[in-house]
Length: 447
Image (cartoon, rainbow, N blue to C red; front, side):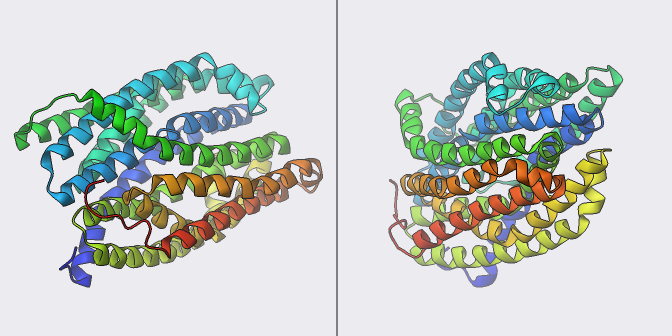
């Protein structure tokens, strides 16, 4: 990046971010399809999907370092010209992903009922949630394999391959879900089996692509046990950071459960839309990870700073634009997910708040990606823990006043929940701004 002009830097960012955008959008679209199909089965099914989805996202998201850490390691090695480390980082991350996926799948599958009940699920909602979660746990090894391989491909500045696999996977998932849920009448279980089948197909495709890349490079494909262990150790700070983040998301769902069935169902839809927007904005964060890792590996601090400023600006502006669209389009979005008038009204109210908060989200996601690309995991873990502590009073206030908020109506209660969640994003933005101002995260060379 050292000699790159502003236009050249823009092309680099867009070359990574645009394919990453569409690939990332395809990921929450899986849940979006599930929500749309399951939502028309009934409100208990949709609410059950919300509970199960929160647990599943927490389980898979806790190991997102498999993508983020692998991207940073591979990109830094690429920038330093260490081709052997590029290959080994990708292989070690994949092996670690498979092992962690099997472990997480066993824990989630065996503890599905306890986990869903712990979030407040009961009666028919609990039964639907447990059914979906037990089946979905089978797909966790495939999900984590995809994370690691996708991270490796991003590290070598390839975001197009994950895009192609994601688009094909999304199409397959939609067809399978409709066929199994309605064609065979499997209900919510059919939705889960359709997604699991798609996940394994996508994982197999990505592994094949990486193996082909390694073969073409002439590198030796070997497993390094020490490298796998190092990847696990280096991922601990990002695990801690992600666990704090997932705790925040689970606490938010816990509050939604306390507000009642309709607000919970509406929250599931709003959170699905928010996740879609988050992944869209995260495309710039992916570019930030890849370019920051490569730039610092090549000791190009000035180039990293230049790219960071440009991407943050795009994140805020992009967040404002898509936020306005979502806030206005709420009445068109809500009917796609439910036939219940109360749920529809609550979704519209929530999406207005979601839209208002998107500029802050754009700022947060970009800076988070830059710091992950820099390998600043230890600070990110401490920072997210501080954010969690700062969010606890907001959660407590919402939960303690759940009955009062529900008495004001489902729309008001759901909107209040999302105002509180936006407060969390503001706290997170302040923490990231404070860190970015320093030079402590600009560590160059291989580390």
